[in-house]
Image (cartoon, rainbow, N blue to C red; front, side, top):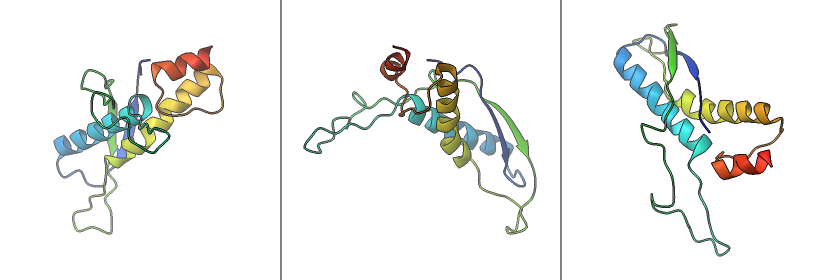
Length: 126
């Protein structure tokens, strides 16, 4: 499965360093894509972790993370001295939900379990 397009718009307050802002948003997006499509924690019936190494627990690489279109709003915070707000976490939390909803809509299903591995998507198609 491949994400064809993703757009993220943030209000980070005053952007103190736009390059750092872009890196934080892209990093959060990579975490979100991992949660949506790759990262699965598995335990056996005795509670032993079965996915304790990167041989078993898949994380996205740079080649796996789709392109991201990003826009920023600047509404300075009245609660911080420089007007800055937090950012980056938004894409970590919203990307898995957005990807899951897109897949659910495309497949006509109501409930999905993340991550949406190829095997899980295949089961939903069958």
